[in-house]
Length: 209
Image (tube, rainbow, N blue to C red; front, side):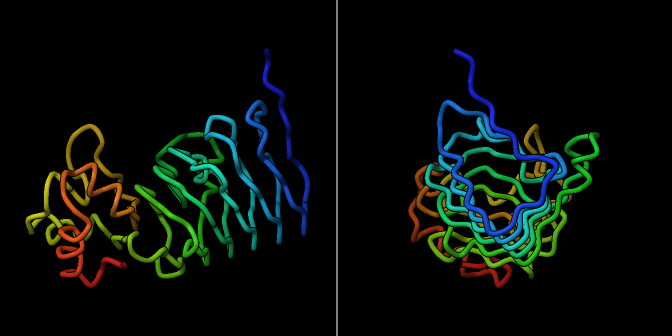
């Protein structure tokens, strides 16, 4: 059976509530779409959600199902938005090296609030992390991780945990300005404990927790 497709494009919407919750539907946000003061309820997998050339202004995202590995936020401008719910492996901000298409030059994020979200492995590209409100412990956020690489890699982390990757196939990109992780997941993945992670994290004033 072919999936149903719903398009939101070439329009300006204000004070609307968009329910993107049908698992059998593909949702396309963009092109040339502006959403202002809207609430978006997301309850679909990343493969059902397509974002490009969208301006989100003062919007609220209610993520009802964990959104995993969704990089298409970098094809949108996010300003003054608030996120609730669980997101993992998502990228936000300006990352033009990701693709040559024009929409990859448009990504940005500023004045956004993730304090009510649970983030793990979420990266913020080419943006000022000072304008972003990050979630508190058990989430923790490393600011300017690549610039701080000598300090981060100069201490012994518990288990197999590594705060950043500076070599190999999955090296973190130079445009990464911050990365947020969720301690319980990272501890389990790295064969350590939240307490052991926190003990090292507290040594650094550029890690927000």
